[in-house]
Image (cartoon, rainbow over all chains, first blue to last red):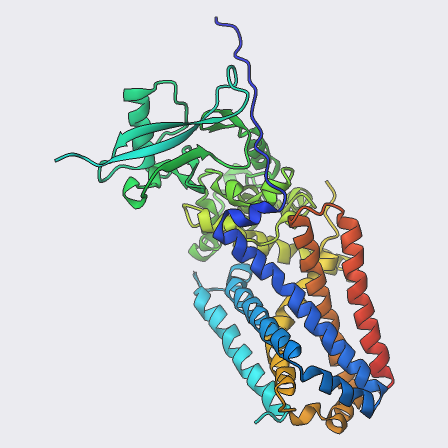
Length: 134
Length: 247
Length: 113
């Protein structure tokens, strides 16, 4: 019998943060995760807004005024893009997490996602309507 | 008519000779219906008998020939040469130590499969005389998708969390536990929770979804893991907020 | 191995992710309209003040703010870990505390309306 072969497994290092750039699917994943920065920042903006509302008319008007700047518009547009990307990825993944079996078969993914998109659309219109946008 | 030749760039590693892996190029005729596995077999038979790799069924059911092909986890028997242009880079499956050439060390994966208790644990002991465990088509359909796993480990190669945190139990093993948890004949979920509802179990998953994207059998491990998370969360809140409720 | 207590932080994350998916884009559109010069009626001082005076509105605002901030915080925590920042306990504490402070601030301010 030949002498025992020496094993020396080679371990490949995963690059700490650079792995995100290795494949389009990892970049899409990170983009989805990055939505948290903008949704979080926007929510904090709303918190500040409520604070100014509580402080009084002058303070609140100053807050609205501060919103009317090019920087604010840019932030809103970028934040809106990321927020929508969060919504789309969330609704597309919901059927995977919450499968619904009716009889023998499962509801198709598009039915569950579709229902979420429909509610999202109606709710958004309701919010805009109640806010007096139209 | 002269045949197209394609170039394979294959990772080589001889543990007895090499300090680190290196790449070796081979030229292979590109037959129209060939897959990367055919090209490797051609190299081994005609050019370099030392090339080492795993394969068996050549029809995407055994799960043996998982490799990185141009950086993507694929079954070598399912990667058609005609779909590639330029040099095809062939490497061992990512996130596993390299034993030799394209062969990885899979001990970690195998031990994780065993840990999740992948067998029926009946709710009550039933003597043989009482007959079979009966199951309706609907009850079968409930878990059938998760039985399709061929243990090819492509999901582990794709999973960024497994790459970063090797102690993560991983997509296939947790999906296998879920398969038994969903089986109407099984009563062992509590026991499996001790393994998978842990910080190195399902809670290491961040739903990147790469596992489901690369799965050749469309098992959708990502979906299974989210279902485990939701069920575990419901359990946790019920146990902590309403401890008087018995399971 | 003992089962993890992760569900404690994951539950609100999942709820917050759902809420922000349904609600945040419409809210951004509202303040975007302000930024563009078309302040919606509800965002005028009197209307918004009246709206925020109602106890039900306060409850809803605090709930939405908490869940939105919490889910963003949790996702940021996971992302830091993914990008190599291994001090998970420290990062978790920082992000959840920020979410908590935001929630307490909005609750305190609403209390005064």
